[in-house]
Length: 95
Image 1 (tube, rainbow, N blue to C red):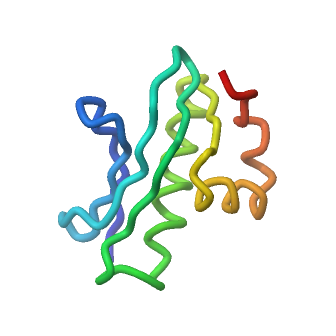
Image 2 (cartoon, helix red, strand yellow):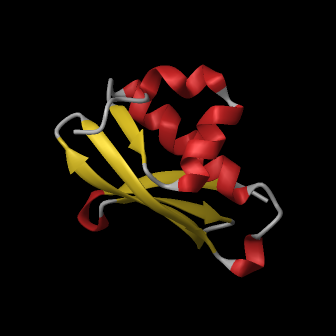
């Protein structure tokens, strides 16, 4: 199973492709260099396979690479960051 996380700026979200099929996304509201993440969804077919974690990890890695910050209003992303404190430096105060 191969994962690819890419941003879809037109839809304001990062998407994860599993073997070239859209398997989920995490949606955001852009606020300058800060992205406010509001919702994450993973297709039922991919539940329990690590797809959600791969999506959030890939998203946060891309945000870090471009010097951005996040506000994790989405409970899934917030929990991921709590469990992976190496991403805590990306969290910004809510705009």
